Amino acid sequence: ALAALIGARALVTLPAPPSRLLAVSMPGPGSSERTRESARALAAALGAEFREISIAAALAQHLRDIAHSGAPDRTFENAQARERTQILMDVANQVGGFVVGTGDLSEAALGWMTFNGDHMSMYHVNAGVPKTLVRYLVEWTADAVFEGDVRRILHDIVDTPISPELLPLKDGQLAQRTEDTVGPYELHDFF
Image 1 (cartoon, rainbow, N blue to C red):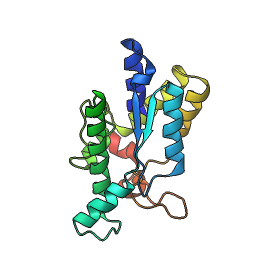
Image 2 (image 1 turned 90 degrees about the vertical axis):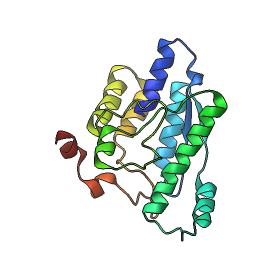
Image 3 (image 1 turned 180 degrees about the vertical axis):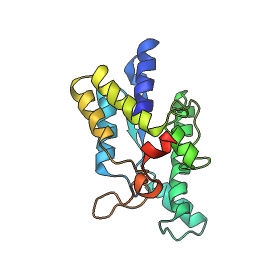
């Protein structure tokens, strides 16, 4: 969300039409309907172009190619991040754009990102921003800059549990919450 907001603000500053922002959602086995709808809604409210490209078939093919069982493990999770990065880089090449990164300082400090996956981009706006500040900035922007639908969407995004959404859903619900694994970001960011 923060990367999209920064991209949208850059287009206002240029000035350029908001449709120059291309938001790409890449659902996989653990993608919840809540985050999928948030991505669609935020892109529409910002006036951005939106594409949804499923990684399911590419992930399944890659796991077959490396003789992986498809069981949810570290390989299963990291293969998704790498597939998403490949898609983003290739789409950026297609449209003459660049990838705005979404990984943040807390994830990098904890090693909670995928090498050659979500740790890289062409313009990494969140790289020096801790997770707690990312959430704060999205919430502040919702209240100080926007109103109506964008404000509502951003508050819903802030209220969404932090998750990479890489493990398959259980009964339609998230099976993975980051802070259940790494602990509270408030403590990590403080230290």
